[in-house]
Length: 155
Length: 155
DNA sequence: TTTATTATTTAGAATCATTCTTAACTGGTA
DNA sequence: TACCAGTTAAGAATGATTCTAAATAATAAA
Ligand SMILES: [Mn+2]
Ligand SMILES: [Mn+2]
Ligand SMILES: [Zn+2]
Ligand SMILES: [Zn+2]
Image (cartoon, rainbow over all chains, first blue to last red; front, side):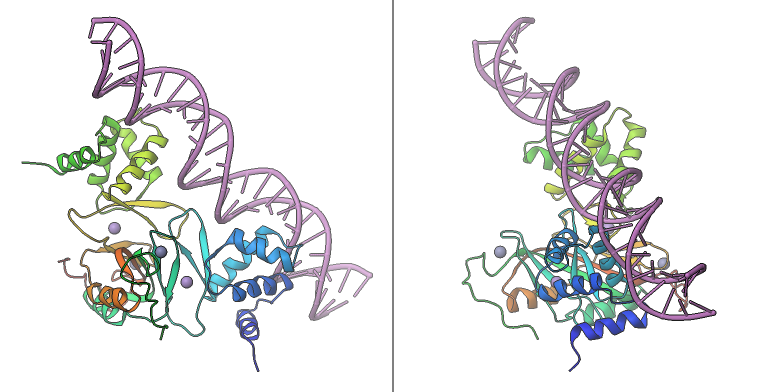
């Protein structure tokens, strides 16, 4: 069976880049922390465990490359750092985020939900949409009273 | 008639802050450039024309204060700088943006458009929405072929 | 008014994330 | 072997933002 890494390797090769050991280590960290939203520094610290000789600049360069190839998305939640988020395989658009103002948790919404809105924007504003960023700020299910009923699993 | 500045002054007072000359100069610049998306540095350079003695740190402090009071919104389009955007008076939510990948133009959408999506999110993810950030990346009407038909005026 | 208190400002230093520069190293190729 | 393009590590440089300290202005108490 072809692994996720194999497919990423192919994507790199298709753009005539190599999956060097440093790049592979970086990708592995991202795969191992798919749920998280790691900063470059976070990635650096984690990747050093499995590839101690790696430099921070290499991590930055690798993340930049992966962003270019749309394997990861670079996001900014307003604290001073960029965060890197593995894109769902085959996803055309970037997924959405729920940022809790209370506890700081960042949850993900994998469903698109924006089809209708995008249709309106494309038509009314005559804007050809390539991608989007959507973040909701509010109070997560863990932090407000109306019962800790965890949301259903994403579609 | 009560001006926009007067109302902002009241908002400051309501939170027991004063509209100092430096703050007033900064607000004036923001009002004079409502269409734009100025960085702190941009604001600083402009405000220096009408209040030459002002310091960059004061501009940062003022923008931070205005952000706290939700008079302006701080946004980040992925270049390394934060930009400050005057919030529409009385708007509950922040407006949306269209960023052109071709020419870099940033257009605004003042309409909400997200009512339905937010209803779904509140219910399905049990998340109490306070605000949002929505940005579309793509090709603006000026940059693509299908005729330079400017979008209709915002609602 | 005088004095004490507090809020605000300025200038510049400090910090922190990110990018750049340079020299070294790699694997492939003639 | 000698050469070349791609990649890397280390550290310097940059640029945005925040912090610090001292000065100033506004406010409140005496
Ligand atoms: Mn995510
Ligand atoms: Mn705007
Ligand atoms: Zn929470
Ligand atoms: Zn354009």
